[in-house]
Length: 351
Image 1 (cartoon, rainbow, N blue to C red):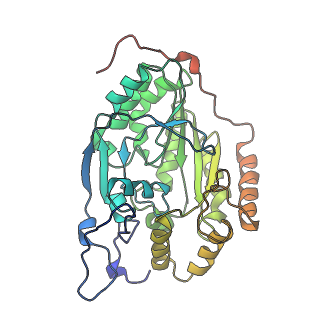
Image 2: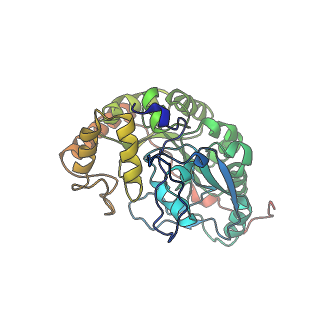
């Protein structure tokens, strides 16, 4: 790694990108003109929001869920590739260091969710979370995700969860209750088994070993769980696909999914800076291969193609994934949701 003295260890993004929604921005310029991250961004700050609506309708036709609930905006995990970084700009923050150091907490999310569920006449699975990780570090203190799960369990409403944090095992009691009526599906995200790469690319996440252990614990508790091997980044983790799927299957995962990396919006600049600083010898190869999968750019906005990629290298990746999934997950599948259990209107409220 180059310039270790100027590198923020424990953070993914190393720069504060500009916000296209702001006319004016405060800039602290180094007296010698060095392009360094601002010191005030290294410490986590918490902001509280009281939204009037927490169930978000997902309009993207290439996503497998129609609704999502996000207890948090921003994420301390600091995954360098995270597509959710761009959404932080809507709050007046940057997609870079601000995204992982300025966390917005929706304290009343569970109460608002209940109010919205009381108006529903039929159940449609809700994803926790469609944007940032619902089990990120702040959840240990805030317990908003746990409150949400209690509401969903009370109304017997189906929920899907995706996370890369072992904290989910804290809520096994609620998840078991949901699982007995086929009301929950969990996906554990594992991007790499290489701990050195994981610590650089996803600095505040659980280790791969911990995530595999989490899959095992959920499986033992009869909670259906799969693995999401995403995003696949050529030259960094694409060669690990077989081993990631093999390990996840050995620990009890029922299915596997994947997406190709796409560096939309400000993420392109953030990832480019990170890649230069962490893998300068491989930068050109990795960057060019990413571009080859998106028609010469690092991102693609076309639904259905944006997360699959295109071209020869993308096809090689998909073939490797398909063969690995067939080899290690043959005969396994997630149990479907039972939408008939939903208690429309509820017998009594929790708040």
